[in-house]
Length: 239
Length: 232
Image (cartoon, rainbow over all chains, first blue to last red; front, side):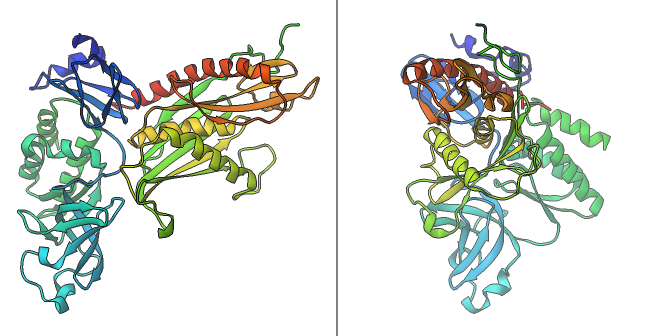
């Protein structure tokens, strides 16, 4: 029963996965993923009578009884605790407005900065156009609240920023940061990847920064291949 | 008397269809869809912040479609820019797509759909709806199902499907009828019904059956386009 739902073409590739209980296939909106009362619809799936259907386009994944659909394209949808990279667009009397490349802009209240800041000196800490790495603290109807309190958060100085598809970010980071750490070690660059798809790189030389960028772009192109970390090691040796 | 279409097709035969997604790198979702010589490109941007602010809806996101027939798409150069016709088609496209979208997840936002007809040979609104449906799916927007759209019509007394320009301009006998239809894939729910010309009420059912069959074919083309995007 469970076997029948696997896309045969993908079966061979699945052998690479360490976690072989995960089964993936591409689904389109309204497509029946599995049928039967045994399954529970998770994120991006819904139940209609006997069947579990996809709610959006993506990769369907079976985790035990739960079926979920992982988006592979589209805009960034902010979630709580996401680390994002954003640019200061405005300074208000009690905080900063941050463009985080999503439908609503982020707000960083003055109390959420890591140290005390006098309200008259806000633009000395963060001026318009400067870039920060921040964490999404809460999402409500008024907007997105950010915080700078946490490890690795704060103002980003020097280096450069480029954008990748937000859906590729989990692959760039890898399992428990394996991929990003590999790139960091091999290029000796500082890299911060925001969940909104903005990537900040700062290294000792332009060459190493460019290498890091190319490595990340290599990962974003090869998203559907398994065993990517090994391929990345190979790529880093060659370049 | 046997039916003779100028294109030599059978009554229920569609033109050669092509579909591809991900054609515009800077859009959140994009698609190209073609019925023979009619080619439509659709790009989806969003969900993103909606301005002017008074249009924002706190209970749900809104859909904004823009259909444009580009000036070089027809034989006689079309004056560029919006027209009465393009505004009307934008609106009916919006209504055709809205029933499958779940926009409650994105309050105060807008999803922009830009549809450009780069080559026109009749049936542009239906090609546009098919492309837009693909582009919305490609943008990862929550949808109940895909939308399939086709024009059925009547050439004199014969019901035919997917008219091209020559068939639309047919003038003998009762002339030609254009009957564009959009429906939710794999259901019997229609989201667009327009009629230009004459059709006896008792034959509408026959026309809808033609549309059902054609939409099934279109759905397969759309499905294939979305599934083969992986692995470049």
